[in-house]
Image (cartoon, rainbow, N blue to C red; front, side):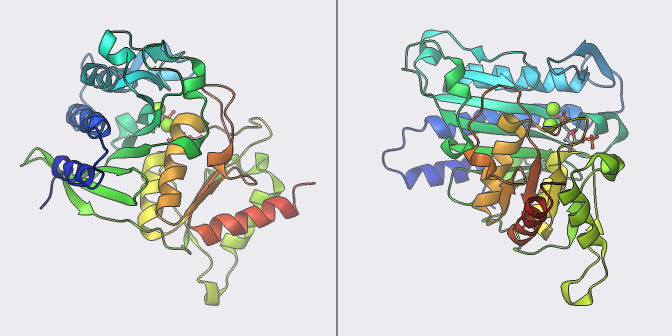
Length: 336
Ligand SMILES: O=P(O)(O)OC[C@H]1O[C@](O)(COP(=O)(O)O)[C@@H](O)[C@@H]1O
Ligand SMILES: [Mg+2]
Ligand SMILES: [Mg+2]
């Protein structure tokens, strides 16, 4: 059994020019994930850091759960302490945070994160996650980070990943050489390699969407849902509907089994709900590395040039044949 720490070091050895900074950064994420995992396992109890609302809203006007704030603080502190990161941006931070001690100022990486994904599921014992995205800075080392360091297209990502806190806890990531999953073994206190080189089946039979918003969906999405629900034995339709309401958990299942997750625009939300920089880009990088696809219904997500830190985008991600089919219907019905 190889642990995540050993795997990171083994992979670093394959890159003689590697300086070890990315490995060290990934291990600080590994450490923070263990701390957050410990508290999530106690979700349901009410303490200062878990159980219910934090009594504050984030910049998007969403009520913050105590665990949103706790997870944000834990990941931010771990990234700051390690010294490989010159700045972070987070769903729970109004603006980006530049680290300014000398070592960090010279660091070459920035991290964007959704510290706790699926917040509405925390107190009801349903799986939640953490999402992270890593870039090289564009500003000069030694200079303060700027917004341009964070508004990079997804294709510039160096690494991305998530932690899913479910029946077991897994850390799944890519550095551009495939997608690898590690399951947390509490008896060892380590993440152990359990899913090497994950591949998304080209065709799946699961669709994930909040059908409660149906009347506000674009016509293309309505037509695609009709296609998913029609009977056709040859293509194993109707597909199965599965929606956990935690993006990480829905994506994780669909990545392993095949499927599509859609959070479209709506008549009341022209850009949908999900955030491009710390939800959509990192999972898009992983989907593509695993042989899948991610679009906004028309464009490749990772080619979108960001303009705002917390910008939202419609989202179609998963098995490439299913994302293609949904895209065809979006184009066909785009005038309606
Ligand atoms: O309740 P809705 O509108 O279906 O939205 C659920 C989606 O919103 C999210 O909870 C947004 O993420 P956060 O919990 O990090 O804000 C996704 O995880 C999930 O897929
Ligand atoms: Mg989220
Ligand atoms: Mg969140």
